[in-house]
Image (cartoon, rainbow, N blue to C red; front, side, top):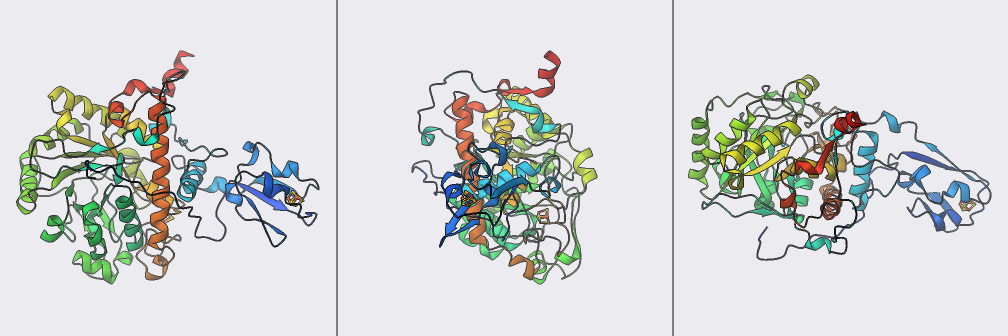
Length: 497
Ligand code: SF4
Ligand code: SF4
């Protein structure tokens, strides 16, 4: 994050599933007719089959690309010992936004550090709206950039654009981790995210549950969140960081505040939040000390009095007057306007709120971008957008609509093998040990494994974003900001046909 020294990204470390039978789209079966000739091992480009001490194993069935395979083993087998079919449970996974293909392709990126080469749709879901209705229009023919090294494509984002004394901070990738509180997710999940943020030269936000001591070694990459419940907010946790985020609202549940069920309030969580073990906790809505831009300025001044060099980020949902909120936040002294759309949220956010309250993020971002341009302050403030960013293509789309960078959340959990079962709110509901504070379930996932999975996924995102920029004829992500002409809405294509 220091511009004078070229940042070195970590390499990919192959990190397979932590479960014995990873979920894949296809299933292969080998019968006793197999003569162990080894042909399937030899021809499979995806490493599905392995041979050990003369015995054949289908070791990585989840990597099989099925009918997309250029030379399928089940056709090449000389004794027809292999058969293949769709995994019957695959289509039961996920939902219209996080389709089974998007889940499996995210797991693939987290394991291998690359987007899937075949077999899975990794660019868009099937929600019929939002980012799924937008496509990036690549330039026809050569852009002359194909031969340029990926390292020469600039994807860094400057976070402080004000001419003030606050830290000059830039991030090496155009995304950072959105807030997930200690209490909503396990300490291992939090550590995985922050360690990955450090490795990638970016940040991760604490969420509203306080700042666990385990994060201290990563303080230069932590964003301290101050939310309406003020859980765990202390002077030293504001002093310790370069960025402080006020959470005024969350896109998945604007107007509702937060609710942590008593089951999740374990002794560690209670200690951190100054609460009582086993009792539910509510974050009110709104901040009862803020009803105007002037009130908000008092908040900013409060942070600056404690930590004069801190960048202030303002996280808001997307009401119809979000453009006024953004410009008001800028004049109050904010460095970052963080727009949180309604497609995100863990399984704990109520569906009725997610689907019916806030303005879709793809409408909010261009509205804010235009308003800030017309006000003449667009290049003085950083716009970060989040809420439902699932893929590198979503990142490119939201930046083309006018954001400078994005904030991620659910995609991180999916990289850690979340299956989108929507049990996040209950104490022992997360069978994957991610959104839990239960000591037994937490042990299902270790943070070294989690860090590698997240680093891999985000390296795949970076690689794909670089590819997109090259195909658009751009050498910097900044050239893409507000270039909505690089997008097409699928409804308009159809209406022309
Ligand atoms: S190609 Fe067929 S016979 Fe040869 S090792 Fe594979 S499954 Fe067995
Ligand atoms: S696997 Fe865990 S984190 Fe994912 S939706 Fe289910 S409960 Fe939530």
